[in-house]
Length: 287
Ligand SMILES: N[C@@H](CCC(=O)N[C@@H](CS)C(=O)NCC(=O)O)C(=O)O
Image (cartoon, rainbow, N blue to C red; front, side):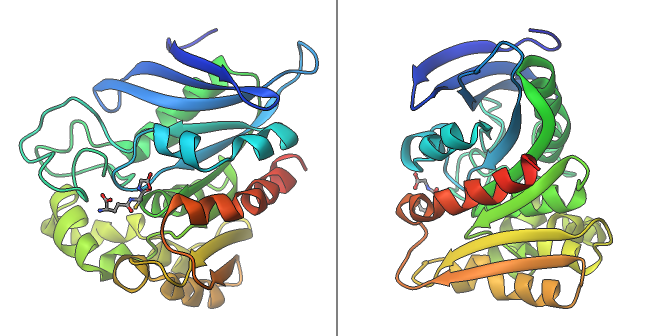
């Protein structure tokens, strides 16, 4: 192992690989962080694997995804390392960080906060794009090819991070993502207002994937988005039709938005379509 140090917390065999949890001290977030990492068994000592990041939604830790989504069977088959960061800094005890389920602890929103008291710790955008990616590159047997996906707030994070870093994250997909937060009450009155500030309104759009797509001019992207039509957050927080409309007006971004009758926002929905997402990423990352 090289680079910044990571400590193994647990390791359990699952299909032909190990579901591990690590902890490390994050310089970006100024606290100790856990992340999950699924590592396939190597066929030979030199074997390396592509890496897929999964970003979780509001109220989650690094545990929800590894316990409930069933991704391990497919990651084992396709031989992908899958990394699941936590959803916010932990243990910082900032005033007001635990009063709401949709703000503060477990609701880091995958952005770099600009406002006090959040700006010292709430730097999940830089944590994922710089610190954790580097730590994975330095410490695990990877091919250097990375993809990213996520759910809900994590779907928002995956889209923003994937679209703004096309050379780092080659493949991109989401389950029920928050697509246009600058147009929702949660975005305007809670998350962006408090983390980014009204006075920085001009900077909000870089954390809104619908807005990022409108001005996207990088390599062509094919994004898979699955959405249940019985999702309790569909028309208040998620707004996938706005994302689709933005993509339809930019030839560089193709969004395959699949609406699924009867599914809600839960991990029962995620587990149903997990195989398709792993397949989507494996095709690009193994090319
Ligand atoms: N406010 C509700 C909803 C939160 C919610 O649905 N969170 C989603 C992400 S936005 C989730 O993944 N929850 C964890 C789980 O289902 O294991 C709650 O706290 O139960």
